[in-house]
Image 1 (cartoon, protein in one colour):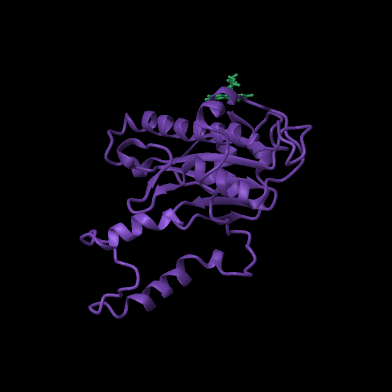
Image 2 (cartoon, rainbow, N blue to C red):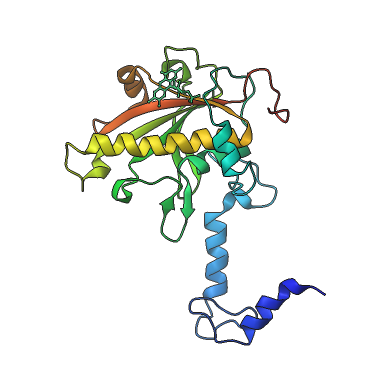
Length: 249
Ligand SMILES: Cc1cc2nc3c(=O)[nH]c(=O)nc-3n(C[C@H](O)[C@H](O)[C@H](O)COP(=O)(O)O)c2cc1C
């Protein structure tokens, strides 16, 4: 016997829960609801339409389960500086960005990392061979900033061969509720939380990552950043050298 239906049956006999509509009983007071819901799906989830190919700005929905348990990921978290020449898959990039600073409570728009006063002032820029993108967390997609490959400008060190370099940029204007002298501390702290999310995601999935310093002014110029946008640091991500995808350590 399928016991997984039991809770539903129990609920059907109880008082309706506020805000939850019972299955099979459309409200006569809201006849427009089904067509509205359909329109919402078609507008918000074009990436899920069957047979539609992902464009360069699309990300597949993040896989928010699986990976190694948190304690194992913490045991394995480390900096790795050597990268294989293999690209991340679209799914890996999607999961990486969601883990870094995606929306984990859609009803409130809150994120996988904390931010001072929920300012959410850190933007994730993604430097790929095909161009520089910025992560838009609410639709969970990328927006092209420039078609230039800026990875070589992200480090004087030898990490620009990584397929993905994330550049964490604080928009200090979004910290307007904080005192001006406090804003850089908040921004640094908030970026650090995202950095650790990236480290833990990489440890959990066997990817390599290094957070690193960089020469900020020329990169900010190439990225077209405004005066309130401050580059905090960059974090290179890729498959570890000497390991093909699917054969991770
Ligand atoms: C703010 C910050 C800046 C860093 N900058 C660099 C860097 O420029 N180059 C580098 O190779 N590693 C850099 N790292 C990585 C550290 O060297 C590394 O985290 C440290 O050696 C500890 O190693 P672990 O991460 O494996 O524990 C940086 C780390 C932090 C937190």
